[in-house]
Amino acid sequence: MRSLFLLLWTLLILHPLSAHTQEYRPDKVSKKAVQLYEKAYEKASAGNNREAIDLLQQATDADENYADAWIALAKLQIENKNYSYSLICFRRALSIDVVYFKPFLLSYAIALAGTGDFIKALETTNRYIDQYKPSGASLEAALQKKKNFEFAIQQEKLSTTPNDKTVFAPKNLGPTVNSKMAEYLPSQTIDGKQLFFTRRVDTYNEDFFTSNGTRSGTWESSFPVKGSLNTPQSEGAMMISQDGELLVFTGCYRPDSYGGCDLYISYRTASGWSAAVNLGAAVNSDQWESQPCLSPDKQELYFASRRTGGYGGSDLYVCKMQDNGTWSAPINLGPSVNTPADEQCPFIHADNQTLYFTSSHWPGYGDDDLFFVRKLTDGKWSEPVNLGYPINTIDREGTLFITADGKTALYAAERKDSYGLLDLYSFELKEKNRPYPTRWVQGKVTDKKTGKGIAATLELTDLSTRQIISKVTTDSSGNYLLTLPTGRDYAFTVNQKGYLFNSDQY
Image 1: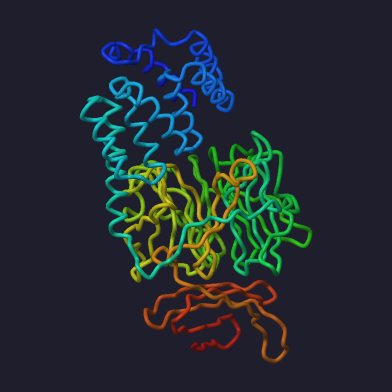
Image 2: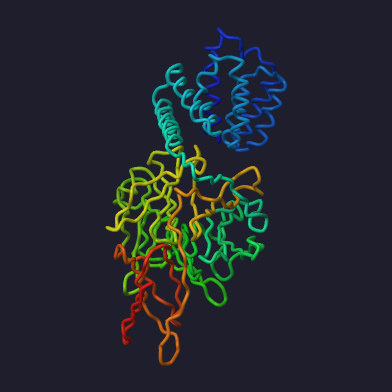
C-alpha cells in the first residue's frame, strides 16, 4: 500500500501543470480539504487504510471538487477490492476535469474490470495508451492489462454453455469455522467428515485447525489439531491425505531445514498428530519448497519449488514413492505446466488425473489465475484450461480443494460476509471445470485361513487404457482406502510375498 500511495502522491504533484486549461485548479482547493488529504497520506503510508479512507471522505465533504482526494479514495478502494465504490470516486474525479484525469485512466480500467466490465476496461486502457502515451514500466503494465482484458472478453464469447445453469455463489462455512483472523488453505478427508485448514493466530504465527462435519452438512466448532504439530514456529500450506492418516505441510526457517522453507510430514497417532518430520534432502533443497499435496493413493507428492534447473520462477514438481518407502528425486512437471513465471498451489483431485494450480504466465484475467490439466495416458499433461470468470478475477487467486464427487470446491476469500479477514467458502463448480467424479472404497485384506489382517499392495488398473489409476499399500492391519473415477471398468489386484496373487475385475 505504501508504494502505491507514494506513486499516487508523486503523480498528483507532477500533474497539476496540465490542469490549467481545465476547470480543476489544485491551488484553489480549500485549505481544510488539503490538510485532511495530507493526514490521509500519512495514514496510508503507515498502512492504516481505514483511517486514510475516512480522512479522504472528509476531504471530499470539505471540497466536493477536490479531484486529487477523489482519485486517492478510488485507489484505496481498489486496494480493498471495493471496485463498485472505486468507480463512483473515479467518475466524480473524471467529471471535474477530463484532462487532469488522464494519468489515472489505467486505474479506472482496473476498477471497471474488478466489476466484470471487461469491455469498458479494455476501451479505457486503450484511451490511456493513446491519450496519456505512457512509456517504460507504465506502458508495459498497460499492455499487460490490455492483454488480460482481451483474454477475458474472448473467454466470455467462448464460455457460453447453454445446459450449464451453475451460478457462482460462494457460501461462507460459518462462524464455527471462520473467525476474525484469517483462515485459508482448506482440505478434507475423502469422506467429507473432517475439515483441516490454516489459521493465522497472530502476525508471525500460523497454526493448523480442524472441524468435524455434522449430519446436517454443517461444521462443528473448530479447534487446534491435537498432538505435537502446532508450535510457536509458523506452520503453513498444509494438506491432509484423503484417508486422514498423513498431513504434509511447509515449515520455514526451522533448525532442521535445508533452505528457507521445507516440506514436512506428520502422522496421526492415538494421542494426536506426531511431531513434524522433515522430508529430507531427496525432496527439499537449499531453495524454497512449499504447498505440498499428496495424491489420493499417497504414492505421489506434488509441490511448488524455486530450486535451480526449472523453467523460471516457481515450478511444480512431483516425487514418487519408491518400493523401499522413500521418495524419489523431484520430477519437474514440464513445459506443458511450468513457464518462465510462477506456477504454484498444486491440488491433485481424488481421480488422480486432474491437477489444479495457479499460474502468472498462462493467459488469464489477472496476476495469478487458476487452471487445470489432466494426466494423459503417456504420463504427460494436457494443455492448461483457465477456470474462467468469476472464479478467476483481476486479483491473485489461491488454492482450490475439490470434493471427491467433483461438484464442490473449497477456497479462501475476503468477501462482504466474511467474519474477519480471509474466510473459508464453498461453491459449486461449473461442469466444464470439474474433475472426473470419483467414488472411494474402504476395505481390509485378510488371510483366508486365519481371518487376520495382513499388509499388502493393491493396484487399480483402468481396463480401457491399461493405466494404473491407483497403487496403495495397506497399513499393518490390512486396512486400505482406494479412490476410483466412476463409469469405468477396473482390474483390482492384491499382492503380498508368500501369498497367491489375486486379481478381480469390476
